[in-house]
Length: 328
Ligand code: PBG
Image 1: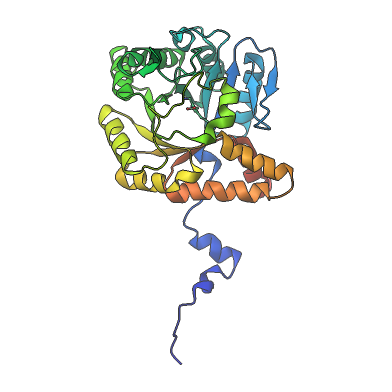
Image 2: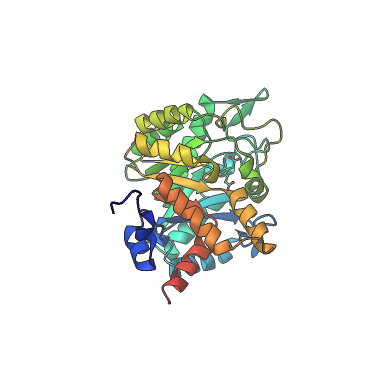
């Protein structure tokens, strides 16, 4: 009797076969851990809407870097909470600012840790916008100078990778040319090229004290309805000199990650943002989901969509779970 239908189940019939034919995996090597450092904080404080994620004072931060290094997590991305905010966002590019100090601490504690920094102004000015505000408008070109200065001061403190998240036009070019002029030709730019105006950033804004004081971010962050526009953003950032691109948020934008993957061969990151984390934690706390399985499946889906690496608050848990699964 001839076969009349395909036997797909043959390739799923045992754990060994499933392992052999598995197309996508995630590993601790693909993870970057976002961290919040707060100026003047004595210890650490848990962020209410993000259980297990903390604001760190510098001493606690040093201890946490040691723990992360022990878990073999390859990289972190830093966000700063300055003690003062002003209209010029001057703490963003203060060489003794909280992020600049944290970079030095991290590099001293573990020189092999890849230290990335979020380059943005929203945590540093009272308006809470990612660029400079004039007459109620977020002005583009004048913001570039400050954003480039911020990236330069991170590079000077020892950052390996600067990641502009402000979504002003031309910032990759402004950063690249200032870094090159100042001799930081090896500092890498990971552009938040495709960043949507998303409600999934809600818990982060509480965490970073960066909610806009007026209006919203829709004149600079992208409309969640658009994907051709993502191609334009990615294309122009590559032309301006971005070494790597990011798609953000991750979970609701897997199709966008796939399209950017097909557009370019440069490394792509995706940011598994705050509300994606909070939703998992809340449901897990209620006992409604299997947290490990859900988070693992999410990471696999980001890799399947085409992301090389993932910025995720779950990174330390994932590293521990991976270790446990190997029986260590
Ligand atoms: C700052 C910035 C934001 C996030 C990363 N960098 C917030 C925003 O743009 O409003 C979000 C990260 C998260 O939600 O986990 N521009």
